[in-house]
Image (tube, rainbow, N blue to C red; front, top):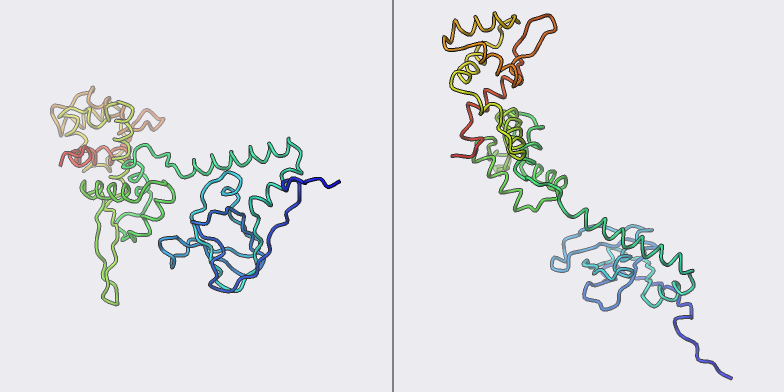
Length: 309
């Protein structure tokens, strides 16, 4: 008596192939999904619309197509042998024949792992940046002032860090340049060609801009812009005389009054509260250089920072 055997219960082995250089191992428009394992040689993954652009290179032991086969996600690259190679192809039929031999619990683990991997992959492609202009300003504030930085390298580095789209990043660069926080300059090379570079006049201005945007995102008044006319004059005066030695509060008020008659104790206390002065733990107070400099910059470049140009 002959019994008809279900093909799914038969073990279908993986397919072994030897391919010559230039041979297309897998094409995105192929109806058959499979896992490709490189045994020997070298494969190049290329864009379908740009066949000469190599996205990544496969070396012996590398494999692709797992998500394509298990989760039915499209594999969008063309695989071409860059030299004579040996590959193993695991088709859907082969995979199904193997899966039928597995316990249900292990099959469930594999499915769960594949689902979590897919979710993680999708999450990794989504940017977590909420304010792209602030994010770019913070990124550039960590660079060196007055140095000509290669623009394309900056774009690539920030793109990898932020995962923002290139068009959005370029618009943010333009926004910072429009506010005069950065300069886009063309540097002439020895061979006569030019290179686009980004030059940052003063990174402290970018830090000030980041602080302003941070306060605005919290619906708070940015401290320098809460100062009245007299307090702003005091900041301007102190920025020009920042080498003044530490003094007690009463002497600071007297010193400021001699140079700005309208200055009062209240004005000095407000400036101390926003950080322009620091306590020296001996009853005296000294100018906090960094905070004073950023406060001075915030007032001097108020129009640029607020974007009212």
